[in-house]
Amino acid sequence: MAECVALCVPPSEPDIPNSSQSEGAGPVFNSGGPVVAIKALGGRNNSGSVSTTMAPSHSQRPSVSSSGGDLSSTSRSSGSLGLARERWNLNVTGLPPEVIDTIQNSRAPSTRSLYNSKWRVFEEWCVERQAIPFQCSVVEVLCFLQSLLERGKAFSTIKVYLAAISACHVGFGDKPVGQHPLVCRFMKGARRKLPTSRPFVPLWDLTLVLEALCHHPFEPLEGISMKFLTLKTALLLALTTAKRVGELHALSVSPTCLQWAPGLSKVCLRPNPAFVPKVMETSYRCSMVELPAFHPPPFSSAEEERLNCLCPVRTLRAYVDRTAGFRRADHLFVS
Image (tube, rainbow, N blue to C red; front, side):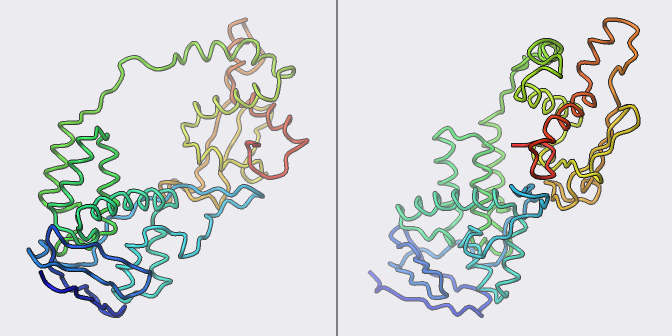
């Protein structure tokens, strides 16, 4: 057997030299600095050369503050970004810490946390097989993905694991792990072996729910409890605006974000200007929602009066008035 070799990599070097690895190769221990000790026992060469490619960044999810009207994304220190392996790879290229922070913030905090947990699972799997996680061959990557497949993991879950590996692995040549031809073919095969089953019958009956909203305990609005008024308001806004949970949470009662038309004929809703949506294109930022009144009075029949119980403008007005006494922030929905 070959003797143990210590490999020192300065942070200014653009690439990490390839190291020989075999089934008996030991793990890499990264203490947070630029020095890496690799225990090599000789054998086959790593099948992929080192590069600095990363997985494509993901759109940022909304991050909403819990106090006040400021919905700006929470700033995080470099130590809480997760994906320490990816950060180390970027540091080796010579990028300043501020640039690395910005690059890693291309993913939402929840995505970084998810990738970090999946990468740790892959690291443990590689350590058991004495493989180098960030520099292992495509064979090890495919064997790990196959183990997930055999354990009954969903295809969407396997995709998350692959994205985390692509973010932290040095890649093969000039391509990340997720773009390797064999990995692409494996994922196509996994999709065929794990078809997504969709139920043919809805899990809940919308007509039944809307009918229930027209009667006790959701009517009359003036006499129902705060709990049922909140549930009715949230459901009607979710159905009529078709917004994500984060976008609904970003709605505000500020005069610039909530505007009533005369006679409550309609309402205009805007999210807090500091809100960062999941889809960051300009057309999605601070988009206005205009909701007209549904069968407003005067009523020509009892049916129109019943349908007016489903009016989101009427229900929203009652909710805003009821919560005004104990509201402490500009958030529309009070927790």
